[in-house]
Image (cartoon, rainbow, N blue to C red; front, top):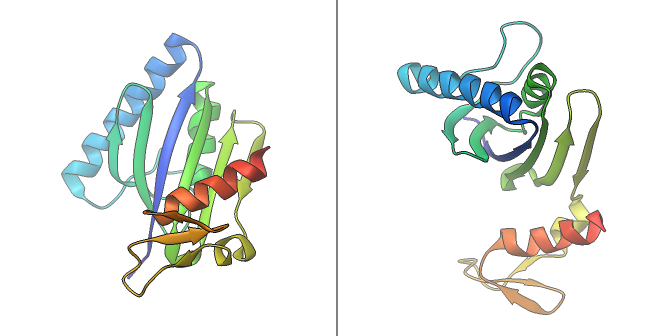
Length: 152
């Protein structure tokens, strides 16, 4: 069974390009709801499948197996001439980062194992997490703080 990687995608571009992107994403969402087998934006290439798609006016959320589906997102960014920013999280494989692409260039800032190890669970049930002596209710809050420090 696969681990699920959460992908939260923001997009920027001209109104027409965003409209075109949203149209394609809604088609993919509809196809995924119909089959439940996952979708990808092209049958060509080695693109990753996207599952459980949710689309809003300025946010696109989906899950992928094991790792972020940045290859599929880069394809979409290039096709629709937009910039996509994917914030991804898969705790089982210690993946947490922010990836950006305009279809040509891409940038990926992610946490390494040392970063993950700096966040500790307060107790076995992991109801609170500790980072730099401060307590967080959610592991993602602490990981996001570390990522923001890396982005500076």
